[in-house]
Length: 339
Length: 195
Image (cartoon, rainbow over all chains, first blue to last red):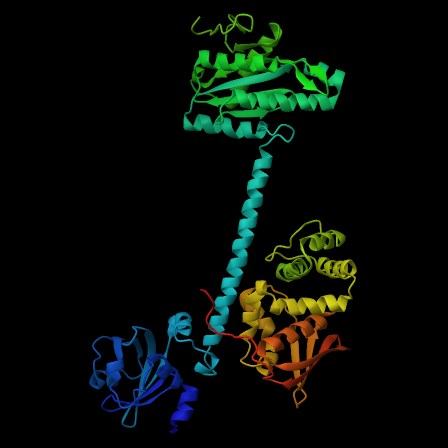
């Protein structure tokens, strides 16, 4: 057997306790003395400073002795700190070695421990190192995720935006229509095509054309609600989706206001660019099971009818060709079903 | 090369010379993007291009740029975390020097695919050491000189450092420790600050 003095034991096990047969502390490692604080508790009762939580029922040396070699969970009475350890029998007493276990991170902070408070063989410092490495890596990951999230939002916004006018684009429309249908929200659908736009382009050039398109975009935004979707889906073609609006008169009114506004000539570098708009409309409530494709094609057919009937007017789609809404008639609603 | 290393070079250039300088270095190096992502991998050529472009743009020698990079890694407040990780290596400068040999393993504990050069320390007695470092990038020895200089300050040690050329494919750094407790150095506590 080896015999070790206090100095050697302290280096090997800075958290050791030597107890005599009565459970009195006859030796204590420097780190343990540091965390207990105050006067070194030599000669004092072990159970005055520590309680054994597990195994249960250990309140004195009589119960502790048979537990030699078993893992012990202890609580430091002074501050409730948890320790784990092992007690072994010695000549005339017991030798206990303690450690912080998983509580090491908090213990280092609480007791201001340094390298020299741990045994050279202890991996405590490596453990602390790992926690910092992990924290640093997690922090980087969080930053990366935030950057990616930001980039994703911008990319998604760009993917559904028309670059020239800042309106939504066809992709946005194709995403929105199935959503409304799936949510069971009624909506009006307006297909708008500019009249005489080609002449503007041919006469004043593409810069004039682009200005006109931007002005049209502004007008459409003014004449619709923030919750409506206004998309440019082709050269001079626009679609407006109006969620919650299935009233024919209301839709006809909005269509007429758009036509009126777009019929005001647009100024481009002193030139008057005169256009107007033809509109085709349909409403989701007219379909037993609305389908985006079908509704777009019906609105397109109604638009074609408006063009055909002399432009600058709006018509609702109807299976049978009967009535129309013209600018001359004012807001005379022509609904195939009601008529 | 690991993005973390490229990102460190980027931060060094940005924090030292400004965002505009970094932008023009990145464009002169032909990166095609503004920021290295720290957890991606990049072609080694990009790292070399950035260092070369930085030297040219800043009209400084490559050696000086690399040495300043090494100092920045330890002394800039933005990289306090790295300084702390290095300080875990030992309680004094000599212990720290010895811990350099463990750097690749320490690095891999955090990021298994991180490129960390291999270090070999030779103790010549009387406070003289030779530190050999594998050429992760040519001129790595200058980064190490800058880093050791800053670490010596951190520990409060007085040290003479020099790049001793290349020996058998490894760059040699000569270390002469004159006084291990020349000044107070900076505080280091095991507990993470503010956590």
